[in-house]
Amino acid sequence: MAEDRQFQYKKVQIEKFLKDEFHKKFRPKARISVRKRQRFIEDMTRKVGKRFGKDVMFLVDFNRNGFTSVLSPAYTESTEKGKIFRSFIHPQVYYTSHCVDRFSERDNTHENCVIALDGFMTDALLSYGENEGHLTFPEGVFAYELDNDRLIVKTFINFEMLTDDQIKQFYGPGMIATFPKDFVAENTSDSDFLLIDEFTHPTQKPQS
Image (cartoon, rainbow, N blue to C red; front, side):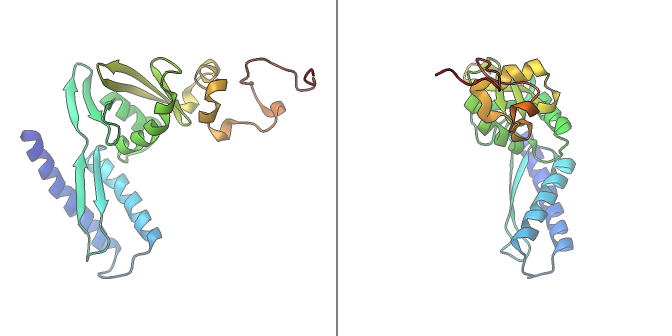
């Protein structure tokens, strides 16, 4: 009950903040373009995350004089691993507070980290079983452990932090679809290493 009252108090604060920002930005009954709406939501997501926390989701209704917001906190739970946040869209996935903090730090974002992590998790779950304890996606790697029927994501390692050996481990031939496009060379002569099972010299013609 105390947690519910705390969120209700936070909800009132956030709604007032959003309404004040809305009226600063737009004139009453003014037509608001799609681009301006997107820019406003992006700006508010960053400001709300920085000011009120990285686990709040809100929706904005531009069709009224002002707007109404629907707010939802991520479900949290205190465990021996510390505080964990349940995914908004993956019911069995939980993120540790360490993971949320590392993602915010390494991705340099103050936005709703749970929503952003969920977006990456959609791709990462496709790699389940490839590397025990790790999930791979184009932007980096999640380290996880299984706790009964729950997948606890312990931390986020962005791609730039990986060593060459780790890149070969996590982004081998079977995982090439998850390799960031910016790091894939069109010509073999431009590459630092090749991810292939059997090496064939570029100048050699395959045997018939």
